[in-house]
Image (cartoon, rainbow, N blue to C red; front, top):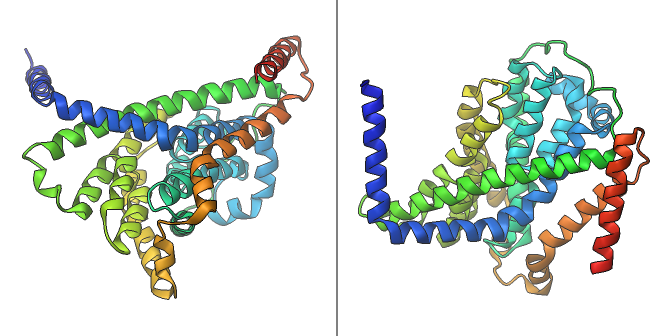
Length: 375
């Protein structure tokens, strides 16, 4: 019997004992994780993730590549990465990593450039920062936009700095496969891919919340329970959603600054998800992991500068945002989801070019007729 197998078995038995003696705390943490997933993660991220994957896989990628050509030249990345940049801006953590992985596997992007792009493309999406964090945690849509602006500037700074030390990327295939596929088929693939990513993300969130509840419920990290900043940092180091929601317990400007830093760092949970998504392409992840610490620090510094030059910082922390924010808090994820799904539907009505695609189109049309008849 090898030493490795013995240590693995010992860790498994120890973990089993911890779970048995901490069943109550574990159950509470899992319930909290499931609540976070249903309350913020899935409503805010799923439609944008589906839309991001669709953009990267459809002919729209070629259009956005031409549109963002000046930016790709500035960042010294291939011109066919415009769709990935847009997906990174709207899709959030796993969407960008998924698009980059697919590009490497398809021969459109080399691994070295992909490793660099992970450093500034893997960010929290605007729906999560504006809706889930800004409105859901701080009760202010302005706080959400402030967090998004700080993170966008931080990732832009990292992208420009990396481009200063980069050479011209290797020549790869210019665009996606010229074989024309129907938008209906691509929509189905995009939704399935987004669902798989959401399921993977929620699984990590649930297990992370369970582990955190055991830690804070026990004697090891119990000292941090009455120290909200320490608790938020510790939670955010492992899982972003639990970390940013813990920032609501912090008083003053530090709450928003901590939330911004945690969102930019992304947490061990997201890092593991990126590692799982990019396993097929074998993209080097060491630069990405190191960039998380710089990303968090730069975002926190930018937020501090924002507040230093702001004449009315108290407005950012308004928890009584009025009727407009109350309506947004209740319906923003649903409204955004409807807009994204409507956009995909409009794209899906393009006539297919093959018999197989025609079948998919007819199935999609029948589904829509059935759905409207039920509603």
